[in-house]
Amino acid sequence: MVREVLTVIGVGGMGHAIARRLGAGKTVLLADYNEETLASVTESLSADGHDVESRSVDVSSPESVRGLAEHAASLGNVTQLAHTAGLSPSQASAEAILAVDLLGVALVLDEFGEVIAPGGAGVVIASMAGHMFPPLTAEQEHALGHTPARELLGLEFVSPQKITEPGIAYGIAKQANHIRVRAASARWGRRGARINSISPGIISTPMGQQELASPVGDGMRAMIAASATGRLGTPDDIASATAFLLGPDASFITGTDLLVDGGVIAAAKAGSPV
Image (cartoon, rainbow, N blue to C red; front, side):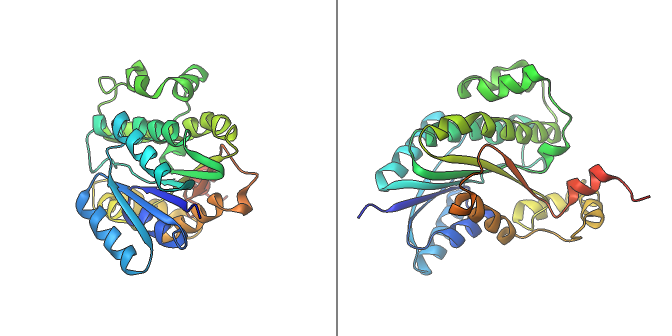
């Protein structure tokens, strides 16, 4: 019997929760750049009875991402993909964020779009920051959606020479994720597969806690306080949304973004009540 393969790229808080939520009965391929984290999550899920494979990956490397996609396909039918890997403004330079969060997503969409099984689905974890960034021009959106992945960072308006502030790099990278997913949906559809993104709000992961402890932490806490839910999100909140988008109940949903932010963006756009 050919096994179904769930591939999770980025196995920190959200990736770990997604793998645990969706991995039963499948071969779970975990991939991460941090080999210590990768080994720890692999051991944890294996101990719980999951069938786990692991592989180191550098999502900014076309060769590394291609090798991961080919390995996933060698394990069985790649029916589910969750791409959570990313860097935040307090973790890395603008150049690294653009390489991982922008280029990396484009490479994953391209390579897994070649191996995703008919009836399969993928989810890219973007960010609510993509909804907060000023709109791009139609020409810029078209370029981000359709420029070959290897040439993306050569676009003048997203080049590491042009964008040097990590927060700006993060916002435009996440906006680019939304655009790239929309563009990829037609290609994935020709394989009978779906692709969507999720934009988490402030989630209690190691990355989220690092951001809360950074100079922008007070602003983040103010956004939480102003939101309808008034709380931090959990990795399980994102895993639940991912399970929906990767499952049969979302069979008519593709090429779109789901905000899972506790109402932060809604509150920001609605403004103060009169």
